[in-house]
Each structure stands twice: as C-alpha cells, then as structure tokens.
Image (tube, one colour):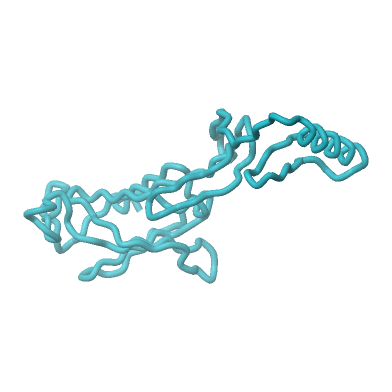
Length: 193
C-alpha cells in the first residue's frame, strides 16, 4: 500500500478498494486529524533507476514513486514524480549541395559575421513510419557548417518509428530511406542512407 499527500489536504491511497483497504484508510485519516500538532508538507524523495537494453528489448525501471506530471516550455522539460520519461535526442549529419565548400564543410550563409558556425536553417519533420504517414513533429533548426544538426525531441516521440524529412528553402525535400525507432540518443547520418 502506498499513501501519499497530493498538496490539497487530501490523502490518496494506491490500493484496490476492498474491506481491508477501507479500514486502513479510515484509521489513517482518523490518526491524521486526531494529532494536534502535525504538519504535512510535500517533499521530494530521491529515487534511482536506469534504462537497460539487450537485443530488441529495452527496460526502463525506477525505484520510487510513479511518474505524475510533466511540464514543458520550449526545449525545457520538468517532470514531477519519479518515473521520468525518456527524452529523445536526435543528431544527424547532412550537407546542402548548394552550400558545400568541400572537406566535409559548408559555407556560413545565414549570418557569416555573427554566426560563422551555422550554414542556414532547415526544417526537420518526423513522419509516422506507417500509413497514412502523418507529420508527428516539425521544427526549424540551424544547421552547422560541419553538417551536424542536434535537437531534443518531445517525450511522446520516444519509441516511435519515424521517417526523417528535411526541407530547405533552396533544395529538394529529402526523406530517410527507412523509418527509425527513436530511442534516448539517436544518431542518423544521411550520408549512410
């Protein structure tokens, strides 16, 4: 049985409703309100866990409470609870033909004076790996002159099978040849596809 305080002067029990659970619940509530000088406050309890993978099986485990809620603003994510969601990161390498300078490098055309390490913006889209191939996520991202592009993805894309689609204002739309299963860290090179 787990008993926790949710911050609104209410006690929740994570047990099935049966006769024994109701008796325990009534005793806990009676004890809580019969003690005059009790102060209840929310507190964080440290937990431990990890993710392990072998062959095609991945196990994410946590010692502690379950995941409660997640809040995000832009690229920042705050998860409350102990079973934290996996936040996938995608790294890819690609070169735009019109900006290619040779030696695995591109010209800085977006803003050569203030941002010499960036070539231009590209739009990265993740497309569902099965019909009807809907767009799951899209974002404009700065592409570095060495061809690298790195971005944090929303947690709900973890373990989704997706195609990568790259769009640029002066180039043809490009898709990955096969869908990729998104894990915590993903490195996809368009030169290898």
